[in-house]
Image 1 (tube, one colour):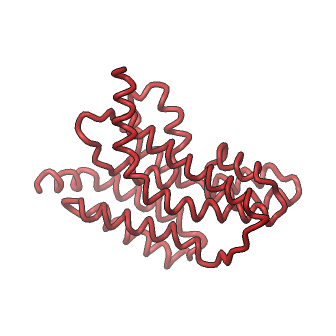
Image 2: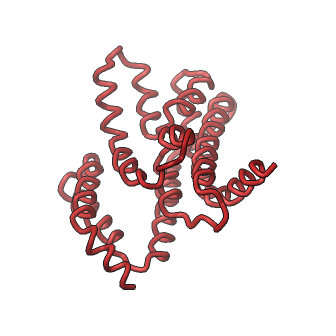
Length: 236
């Protein structure tokens, strides 16, 4: 009974943090399901891909790959390039995922952009199990994606929508999450590094190639300036 109460408390604490993500995933996941249907795939394809791949941008690309010739090496390279940012997410979450037991395996698998944003910055209420909180954030977010992708695939044949501009939903959501985190910070060194590195790399490499260079730049600077940043935070 105590274990059930602990899980309910963690689920109750985690759910509100996932509401903005649910709103974004319902739109984008539904769009993905419709897109898969337009390519001629049944609803099981987007459902299973959402369940086992669980990488939004990669899933959209994988849809077109399924219609092309058999090229496993090129597919592997493309997947690594698209999802390379998760390497940095994983490094940032090493300390948070310590001593998580069996939950760690699912937490690693389910670490998407949105889950990272919540689990890395959320203030977990006192008395709520940290591991269960992060587990439910991860589980709820994937559930939103899988269900919305399945619904899009199911209703694709009877619903006609103008999907132009719907990808902006996720951009808007990340902007809100970033601003919320910015307001919570006591000092803004990390945010400034992220914004400046991204802007510079965008100008140098262009919008199609700036993601990995900007993350490398952020990682190097945060590592090099870790002590000054932590010292500045302690002095505030």
